[in-house]
Length: 120
Image (cartoon, rainbow, N blue to C red; front, top):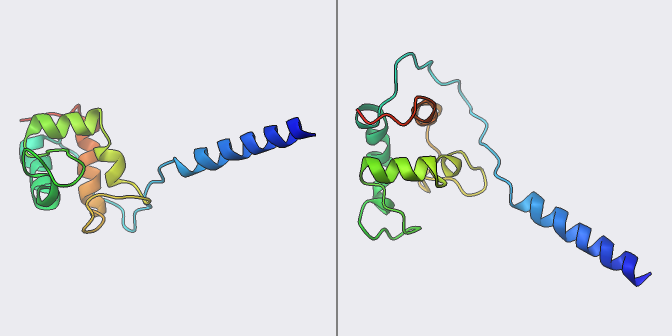
C-alpha cells in the first residue's frame, strides 16, 4: 500500500511540475500585417529592441536577467539560443515588462528568425 501511495505521489508531482514549466503563447488580438520582404536586424528588429528592451537590457551589466541586448550579436544569440522569442510570446512571464508587444512587432521578430537572423 505504501508503494502505491509513493508511486501516485511521484506521478502527481511529475505532472504538476511539467504543467507549470510550459510556456503558453499569447493569442494575438489582431492579425499582423503580412511581411513580404526579408526582415533584417538593423532596419527592422533593432528599432523594436531599442524602444522596448534597452531600458533594462541596454548596458554591459543589465539590471534585469543579466542579458545585454544592445548589439546585433547579443540579440541574435539570445533570440537563437536563449529565451528572447519565447519570453516575448509568453503569457506567464512576458517581455518587455512594460507591456506585450503589438502583433506587428511580434511578427517582425518571428519573421527575422524565419529569414535566418539577417543583420543587414
